[in-house]
Amino acid sequence: MTETHELNSEVAHEQGATMPQLNPEFFSEQLIWLVLTFTFLYVMMSRIALPRIGAVLEERQDKIADDLDKAAEFKREAEESLAAYQSSLADARAKAHAIAAASREKVKAETDEMRAQSEIKLAKHLESAEARIRESRDEAMSHVREVACQISVVLYKKLTGQSMELSLAEAAIDAQLVQGESLLAK
Image 1 (spheres, rainbow, N blue to C red):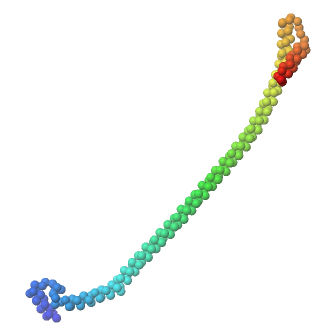
Image 2 (image 1 turned 90 degrees about the vertical axis):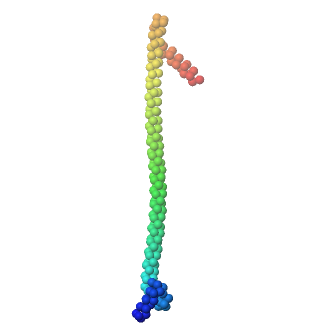
Image 3 (image 1 turned 180 degrees about the vertical axis):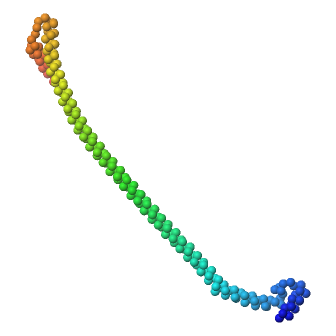
């Protein structure tokens, strides 16, 4: 075979062909090797390489699906946490409003009670003050009568030059007071 090959090389060299695979004499041998190589590579790829690649792709797909499932679970948990937070916040606000309303009611009740007590105390003080005023007025009125009687006696003496008894002046003033009260009553 080496002789054939050397001859073919010489022929190819003489004919000007520089690449033996383009020489039509070797096409049949090249086709056989092509089929054998393709079959070997096909078997290797289908039995060894492709199952490994398929396993890697399947593993990668499973990991992606698992990660997506975990992400969906985390999202669901986050939404549940947010809903729980919002519910707690609404409950806290409701409690705060209830506490504020109760505090307002309590303060209002205490204020009303203090106002009522103050009004009672004020009414008592007012009654007491009115009683003192009445007493002072009555006392002043009693002194006015006495003073009026004394002034009447003094004036009568200065005007007429005669003296007058105090009892007579008191009777005259009492008569005038009774007459004045009857006029006021009308």
